[in-house]
Length: 196
Image (cartoon, rainbow, N blue to C red; front, side, top):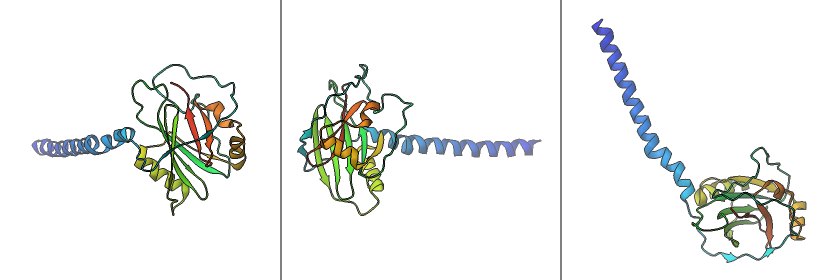
């Protein structure tokens, strides 16, 4: 009987030590790494103020007043991925208290160019990055993780959508988002968030 009790005590002690060790690692390493992703501030070294092509106004409803920004107005809406064009990735970053618009960090990559975009209030800054020698989506994911943590959304735009934006027309993406898809004179596609 004593032998079984001692065996159970040894097993229970080993289990408790393993549990405490795993909990410690989780709280000290994994949990802070996940939380710190949202506290990052993207680095821009040689940005310039973007000249944006204005689109015709649409009958898009404004989001309700609040303090958080969700890219999609309706969580049931699923992103549709058209072929061709470029890839746009967007993340919400620290927004100063009192701002009317959420701050974002975005990446735009085509077959030959790679850009980072920062929106603060109604201001848009762009900076051309060195084109990667890996798959474009891998470059977008790695750069987004480094600069802003994790992306809220990543989507592709086909050439017809880009042509429509260059002509000053809106994008079909806008009907499902809390923002408006726009393009700069350099051909950089980005999303200008709606007011909180």
